[in-house]
Length: 273
Image (cartoon, rainbow, N blue to C red):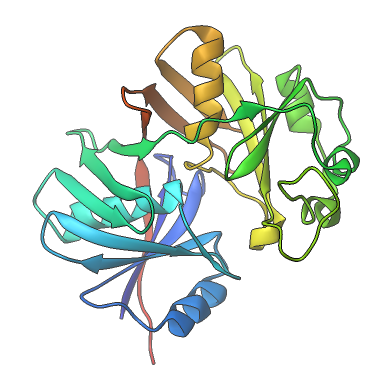
């Protein structure tokens, strides 16, 4: 079974966010997909099912669970499909519960993904464990269905934050004590920047990922905040992880957003059973 590994949101190896991609005519068993993702030990492994040369289904697995949306692994999957599986320059991913993601590739290799906006709301109340997990003073707290988005006063505060991951792993969306039935949320940090429109970091310990290198999905929320704040539709975002990555974003009509970037192939391999 062929597997690819692509560094997403970068033009350089060892930068961006690595994702594994497996393309098949039919789905593998769920347990096998989860085991492959665990073995890969990357933030996400994407599995793609071919419908035809322009249409695909896609699923994403962390080392511990299947997730409902992953931007960087969608970019990595698109990179692989454009390289080896289709001559079309526009493809569509049919995604359970999220509809259709249209993806295109420019002549220079830039991949443009059309996603729904996950617009955050400003909140006054949030879990005490969230405050306890963070070491820096923050300015505002936003919430969408994916994460708490914490706005800091400066880029330096974002860079210097050293969260308590054991506490972050308990963050829920009720702003009250955690119970087993409440969904766990990730946590993003953001601040306005000089050389970019915004800078971010992203923590997902409840999904088995302490810090995600570059997170396409959360920028459907972060960019919505900064687009309104800055009064502009096109923004360039930088995710300030150790690897780092650049996301080119544009707010579209009808609550859609284009998140785009580049990919770099790191590896092709064969999984042996």
